[in-house]
Length: 443
Image (cartoon, rainbow, N blue to C red):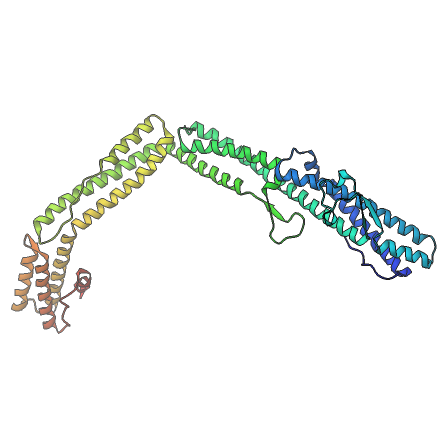
């Protein structure tokens, strides 16, 4: 929709002809827009729908605005026809004709009678309610533009929501029904499994959502920030998206239950194997602890706890669930047991490592002592009395029981120092942990 030139002095014939041409093009554009609005699918849907809430309020106002738009357009058409008739009186318009045309084209010469039915809910100029209003053609076009934009915005927004959400909700509802049937087949039912309760809640939510979207689409419309274009915005899919994610979570749960039904026995066998390995490892750790206490002196050895009986009890419960085809109960129990069994095996291995650490230190010292002996032998010093004495002292400590690791380590270091002095190598540091000493074995 366009806007005519503002008021000015008496127009000449050329100005009148240009104004009439512009007004004619403007009239066609306005008529095209109004007919498009009249035929808009969203408007037809709004006319036939049982509306509620904000949509009902805005449609009542929009209907009045559209009625008023046509009244304004008729007045505009009449004014344009009158101007054309005056201009057609003679080829060269007289001064009186030009004055009349100037007043008609630029002055407040268009009077529109506003019936109560048409303006009851439509916004009125200056916030007043009168039996008629007088406009210039410019003002009348501006007024039509305002009413057209607000009406089109409402129609486009409602149509966008109706086009986007109900079909998506119907597709999700169909998927929901398929999921419900599948859930029922594996024993996932309301009151018996959380996923069954979730399916009931999703069903109620989607049913209510569809009813609300159909009756009050504008409640699910988010206008675009800073946009003045009619229909600027997007449908609010927050509730739909949330329920779609919830249904996807339920589907994954049902898939897990189906998977359990297919490979329950295999998973139970694997669980028994993992727990058995954990028990054997703990038994080995307890045996190793006794060995360490007998062979290593002055060393704190951690206590090894027994296997937790609760895991065996839960494993028996899982076997019962499988025997009675209670897949919906077996699924979460198996997942929990599998994680706990892996944790138990890891704990058993850590216990064995912690218990046998002193034996590992003794083995490292023995290896270092033999490595230095081999190095000395390569240099022809194997029979050196001083080195033989130091070697024998360290060996007695490392191969005696119980072995004092701290004293044995010092004996090994003394042997290394003596060997280093004879070989002309740097002295081995006397301080440092096993990590610092391991690198010397290969020197």
